[in-house]
Image 1 (cartoon, rainbow, N blue to C red):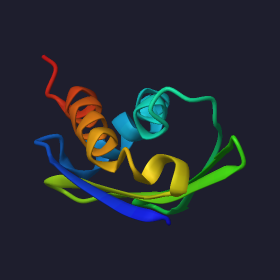
Image 2: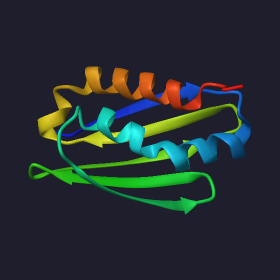
Image 3: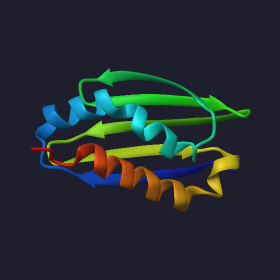
Length: 106
């Protein structure tokens, strides 16, 4: 059974800065969402502040969005049966990788 996972990550980059980091660093989040398994991702900015993505592999499909706000980013992914049992672990990895991606760098 599919299971939705939502992770919210605070940042101090502003909306434009966070959007740029997501655009340039989405690849870093991909492995976190698939627990290292081989999935083929497609992504598209469906609005100025929303990145929609789909990942397919092993007969499974992950769908989700990344919404960018001025002070936080919300990552929502629906994990298929194979990965749903690992939702806790995967959400922790997404959160950690997202924090690294959005940390303020001097």
